[in-house]
Length: 238
Length: 238
DNA sequence: CCTTCTGCTTGCGGCGGCGCAAAGAGCGGG
DNA sequence: CCCGCTCTTTGCGCCGCCGCAAGCAGAAGG
Image (cartoon, rainbow over the protein chains, first blue to last red):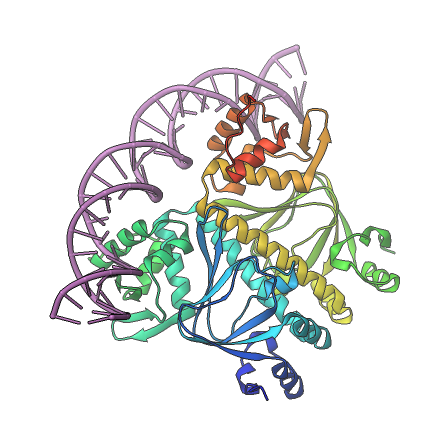
């Protein structure tokens, strides 16, 4: 028999919040677990969505590709978050690629099962509505940023979001806890890896961040916020 | 007694698709109609959302304002579309301003009523999920565009969307059927009114558009598509 | 251990588009 | 009908950022 996952993993997932134990058991019965090694694609843009997914562990990058091959990072998925579900609610085609950036473990629900579950448990639909609503608001904010702010502030905003989502306390400050390249940051902020590199170098020389190969540590989060909010440049003296 | 609107106006609203006559009557019973003259704000960014809205007639502009006053047009709402509902699904605060750009008629449902209706009629929640999902996809596409494309293509894309949403056949071509300023287009595409003006002037001299004060007519939609998709420049001869 | 590959840095030149400024052009109100 | 307001046009100069190119460094793999 196929290994059915432990219902406990659904605890704490916003998508299934408010369901009783029976319902959770039913949900988990339809789920299929999948181990995904770092670098492996989970689904691709344009495919018909065979399933919706939720991440148990690891980190997944959602990337949209334009007609000329330009890539934009839509978001990073962390443990407890769903992904690839937009297709289910809309036209059935994945609007982006999903690729594991760390070794990951995901659960998948076949599209049909997902639909049935939402009909039998309207709370799931309501939860989904909240989640999709939150994401819409976030993307709207990013749209405003990329439309009106200059590159340095956009990069600051992106890092702040990453810290909130994936920050881990470490001696030197707060570290983004998954491999993140300059290119990734560039694709999150609508710029080039060159400009990101220059910006991080400048911040590094000011002691705001420490960064290396696919790795970023924020030493002075408040300074980053100051840049993002364009506060008075924060004189070091007095 | 308060004038209850005709249930027939809900026909064709995606949000209430699939509801039977009884349910529609119940929905309409909770609605409050509101006439909104051109230029009037309907709600403001940051307010707690007292109600969700749907537009019966007219046109409403949804504008988000950044911390430094920079404005971004999130979308234009046409008849049959809901707006100001995101707040209800998320944190209860309107994330943007809504202002009528034409004389308009809207229906409003108090937040509490909206919630109750969704609980009693899960189909509404499912419809909302589809609608919000579609908007999320659209905003994601715009985010990709503004992140990767140059201004001219972005403006072309914006006009194409407007034509799809609010295009009216007219002798000279297709007209955007509500007042649309250069400033509006700039705020839709993350540029300045100057650049929009220059671009439209260039297109005008090529016979692609005809535009004047708060008014745009597309004479050669295919040429606009060619610009948006960056097809071979479409030699006029042969 | 050496090779290769991938990711990062940095200089330099060019240019797309912004910001400013000033002038025209419809529109509406008195 | 004229005045004032808002929207638009267009020139000009500058600059933030991109694009290219070359070199470096650390990881991976034989």
